[in-house]
Image 1 (cartoon, rainbow, N blue to C red):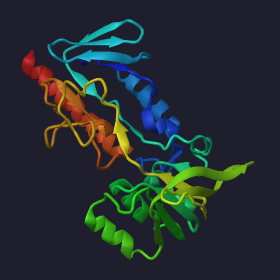
Image 2: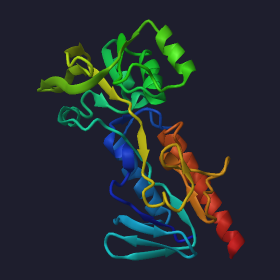
Image 3: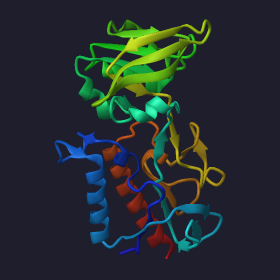
Length: 285
């Protein structure tokens, strides 16, 4: 009953449209990510949400009503904003990585780890994400090799201790990924080629799964100079709420969550944001 308008942005449905099987959405033992997003869109429209195919290029939060300008040239005004622009996994940016994305190359261990039961896996990265993903993947893999370009991790010491104690994990220090190797028919990863940054020596590590864990980048470009952010661009919210540093502006999902990053937690925060926005509007009427 609040005349909600959803502007879809550059990738309607976000990260879930680029994954395949989703196995942790309540009520669905397994669902394809793109199918789930189509169902969510249909549900929102059935509830009276107007959905617009446009990309917001600028957002002015300095005064109410808030003003957003779309790539189409349309100006949108509103009394409250819910930011749900999500995040994107950072990738290495090599052509072979792109080629095998979804066919052995992944940026989400909790999404795709299960497919490599009993196989050898390679993880690239050196922060908390990489160490956590490597530890998680030992639940499935026969062996996990962590490749890091430096000679020590940036991850928390307690995580590092767990990693070094795990008999399934091997670490290859001072190496960068040169290429992902695999088969064309069917598409599938067979190995990765790594280069020693000190000697230039090339090593091939056999693996069926290659996980890129070099962090996520929240899509906060529109608001990074207007709202309080932390941890490399994540929007700060009041604990136990979706309220941001500007009254009437709320944030939900991966834009603000650098810890859980699950579809179900994002949906829960979306519900919180809707209720927070409704309360805010009731109080300012």
